[in-house]
Amino acid sequence: MRRDDMSTNPTVAPKKRGRLRKHDRQARILALLRANPAVRIAALAREFDVSTETVRRDLDELSRAGELSRTYGGAARTTVRHEAAIGERLRERVAERERIGRLAATLLRPADVLMIDGGSTTVQLARVLAGETDDELTIVTNSLDVARTAGTNPRLRIVLCPGDYNPHEGVVTGPETLAFLERFHADTAIIGASGLNTEGVSEAHPGAAWVKRRMIARAARRLLVLDSSKFDTVHFERVCTLEAVDGLVTDCRPEGPLAAALERAGVEIHLAGDADR
Image (cartoon, helix red, strand yellow):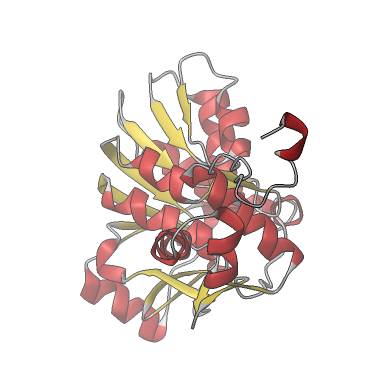
């Protein structure tokens, strides 16, 4: 056969492109969902030149991380969220959140290993730790704002999680974030939330909800920091029951059914500032 016949001879198979690694496949799936409302397993299998079972495992893993919603035969974008972006929330109820952050800082012990997630109240805690603590603490966080703020204090060791960046929340989430958190044991997990009611802690952002759950699971003590405007509200995804929380740091004492539910669950209430007078 002549060399110039090879390009037209049907028996000569074209060279296959290299298959993507799992992380690259999953990143591509999320990119496709940003451009399309849904994707199908069969189409993804053809796109990546892998089996449908491989695609299903990818979708299941991304679903567990809150990055997409599984559908019959594929996946869809996660439900649209209706919570203000982190930059806007940082300008709301500043005094209350400052008092909560200051009180939460007093509950920490020297040499503690902390897991701190993203949120307007946890950023206030980071500001207190940056400016006032002399303790040598280790902070594992998925929040860029928490890392940047606390990192200005040289006595604080900051361990920043990898993952997919969410500019709305200023955090990283996803399978890599969850796997990274599995490597560590923390003395205390400090998490914020979108809502708190008698059923438990809830979160508007599925990816963030999974990170909170993982931090709770990896810590010996679990503190919830949120202001009273979030009492008796519920958001898209439940993070945990009240029994999974050891302490609530807030600006106003809960009342009614929520107060009763917190007492039954054994949650210790820590009141910040003027609200407990």
